[in-house]
Structure formats: C-alpha cells, structure tokens
Length: 567
Image 1 (cartoon, rainbow, N blue to C red):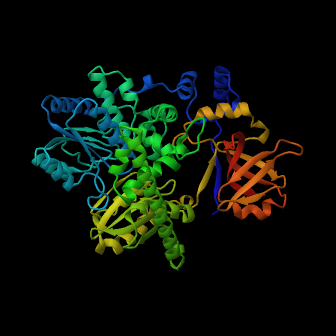
Image 2 (image 1 turned 135 degrees about the vertical axis):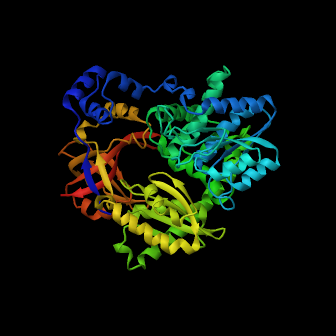
C-alpha cells in the first residue's frame, strides 16, 4: 500500500539552541524534544527522569472522597465487596490491582469478570443479580460503567452500591453511583485526563493508602500491572501514564508478579523491557483468555499467590492464545475473500463485514488486520445471543466513535474511543446500519485519511547514528501514543549487495549512504516486494526507526525500515 510521507514542523531554532546548551545534548535529539513540547530544563528533567513523586494527588479526582468513605464504611460494617472489571487487558489488570491490594487488608472480597458471550461488555444485569444473591453490598467497577445508567439504577433498587472507576467518554447522563471516578467528566478538575482503567484503579488504592497512612511501597508493587495496562490499552504515554509505564517496566524486568513472571518464562531474556514487549507478547496472552475461554483465568494468573499456581494457569492462558491465533487467521482469510469478491468494495469509504459464525473473541483483531491491508474505518460483526455484535477500528484522523454515535438510533449498545469501539444491534437493523455508517464516513472522512501516512521527525545523515546517539535516544522511551519512537528519514541510501527476503516477506538489508561509509544492518517488515529493485543497487529513500537487535548474545544497532521510496 502506498504511503504518504510528511515531515513534522521544524522547531524554533532559538529554543533548540538554548535547550541544547542547558541539557548538554546534540541539536538533533534536542529538536525532537522541542517538537514534543519539551522546551525547558525542568520539563526535560521530568521527561528523562520520571518520578513517582510527580504523580498527582488522587484526592484531586472528583468523587474520590466519596469512594474512599464508602469503602471504609463497607470494611467497618463487614460488608462484602465485589471487584468488577471488563474482560480485556485493561479491565483484568485493573481488577487484579484493586483485588490484590484489598485482599491483603480485608477478607470479605471477591472479583467478577462478565462473560463476553452471555453478558457482553461492561456491567450486566446478570452480574448485579449474582452480586445481590450472594450478599455483596458494594461493587467497585473498573474500566466500565460510565454509561450504565440503567444498570446502576437497577443495582440501587436491589441495595447494591457501585463505585465506578472508568476512563471512557461519559454520556449526557452520569450513572447514579455512590461515586464516579472518571477524569473525563466535564466537572472533574483532575489534572490528567488520559489514565487507563487500571490507572484509575491505581489512583483508588493510592488514595486509600494515603488516607490510612499505608506505605507507598504497598501501592507501587502493582506498577508492573499498570505498565501492562498502559501499553495494551494504547493510552497516551504522557504525564502520569509515562511515570506508571516507566517504573512499571522496570518492575516487570526486576520483580514481576508471579503471573507475569510465569508468562515471561517463554520469552527471550532481555536487558530491559519496552512497551512492544507487552503489546506483542504479554497483552495478547492476557487478552486471549477473555476472547476464547474465561477472562477470570487472566485475573487468577495475575493474582496467583505462588509460582506453582501461576505456571499452571500460564500454561492454560498460552493455550488460549494458540487457539486465538487459529481463529484469527481463518477469519481474516475469510474476510479477505469476501472483500475480493465484492465488486462494489473499491468505491466504499468504510469496511463492514458480518458473518454469523465468526468467533466473537477475535473480530477486533480481524478489524485491525483489514485496516492494515485496506486502510479505511472498519467494523467486523458476528452473531451472539440473537444480536449482531461487533468491534470497530479506525484510521488516523477519523473519529470512529462520533461516526457510530450518528447511527445510534439503529444500535442497542455502543461505547469506546476515537480509534476503537464496540457495538451491538438487532439483526434486522444491520442493512440500515451498514448503509448509514457508510454515508456518515463518506461525508466526514478526509481524502488523506484513506491513505496511511508516515510522519517522520526529521531527515538525518546515517553517520549521525552512533552508539552514543542511540544511548540517549533510548532514554526517550517508553514509546507509545503521544511519545512515539522517533522516525527518521534518510535520502539516497543503497544496499551493499546482500539484500534477502526472510520470514514472512520481510526485507533484510545492509545499507550505506556514502562510498566507503559505515554499513547499517536493516530490516523492513512486510517490505519484500521491494527486493528486486533494492537488489539492483539503485539508491532510494527510507523512513526508519533505530533499535537494538539482540541475537545469540550479540547486540548491534539496526534500522527498522517503515517505508521505501525509489527516486
């Protein structure tokens, strides 16, 4: 697929000059800092050395005082507390965090994860009945609940109180819970709005610890779970999320909880972990339980008291992930086949596919796969409990949530973010929804948003790349939304003669930019179609990131090529 290349705006040279002198850093790296809004010594210090002491006070969050009072009341009166969360990585890490923290301090506690197939996303009537029938007076809902107005009203009628800890966008009406913790509420003045669901849970236990003079180390033991949440839920790695991810990744390497440690036994040893290690290894395995079997397995894994227990559950979770891969591959191939047979597809601005036998647990992954190939807002639907239920994914620059909201009269339930959402509707409404969604997308999407774009930070000569340069660049991590791994552009490079295709259509190269100059190893994932021209020795431009390649105990710098442009 052809990509557009666009350079970020060049930062103010005077600001770069001043900051470069203040922090004793070369101007290339200083320019990238300034591009990211880091334009003073103090901001640079906070960026390079994130401190847990810089986390905002949890008491600044609207509803926190009421939430803590209700938990204290429950404990003082021996009421049973249920910790409730969504079935994805964010929800299960949130539940594991809050459940483990309170389990060490209060015995009348249990956790609950709704079944993806029988209950669906978020708070369910079934779960409220279960809580009521089993004597629970308080439910702490994590990563869900902000739109559950009817469910909370039902719970109130059964004398079951809720504390909602959510980070999704609120609707016009806030549920009548005892307390609602969500910085995105219009009248919440909490300084940072982009915490994950587990991040809200972390603030809850942080607030409880502060109120009861519990040492901060008792809260910080859950930082590894916080990092898994931040990385997996694709929240901006800025402000508090950067602090939680930075310290959580260190804990993940040095002292992970039993469940994460058991998972990592099947992963290559590395000097340190980054966001990608979570996104591509840990996250999918935690997610797989909820997609294929029971998400409670993931919570049991992350709350395991012994390594023996953790290893048994990790084995089950790994099998769930293997099953998930099989479903993912077969459904993706089926979806590709349906698209290729649809003569009208080329004229559409959106992709919506439905098949009543597709596995509900992997349709979100399939939607992402279709975006990679066709690059347009995508919804994949299947049948569940007599309804059409689906997962939606968007392209850069298009507000998917707003587009779905415009079709709300055809939907029974929906929720999510700008780039990802879930929805449920009656089967008979499906044709009308497909037609209206396509109309909404066609009306609102910009032409440029239908072509993937690579935004690179700046052009640099390859000779700029040295071990010292990379050692500083590495300190820009953790990388993710809001702080992406810097992408550079290099002009007029060529392969020195050993280009080859490896794995699944990946291009392996040895590049130089000047006769007799340094040669850099490079890998271009999925770029095998360029092999023939590259191997002819012609020059071309590249967009790339810089990384360390660990192989057989050796470490070398490698260029990770994002795209190739022939002149």
